Image (cartoon, rainbow, N blue to C red):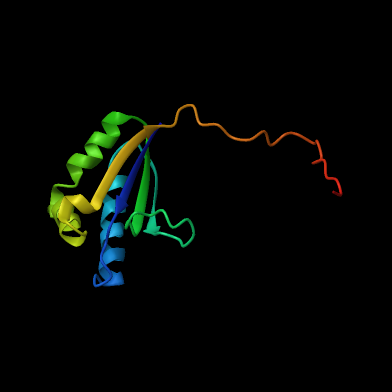
Length: 121
């Protein structure tokens, strides 16, 4: 499975309704692609302080690279890709996109009945 991750630097003067519409359009394109499994997108949460100016993110899970590539080509319909870059800080410079193979995803062992060992110090 391929996880496509997109980080966006959207300036504060862009209306939230415009951001929501764009995320909805990206979701629509994603789910028009056979092989799209999941979509999630929204504003960053407060916390780490390491966002490097990125304000929003989307993730899309695809069955394979061919499905991801079909999605990317689909961004040309209705000028979605261009409109997204017009919405971000510095155009394409305000977009970071990577894809990661998550076939070998690791999860903690949920089956253990071992209780944590706690001690007074």
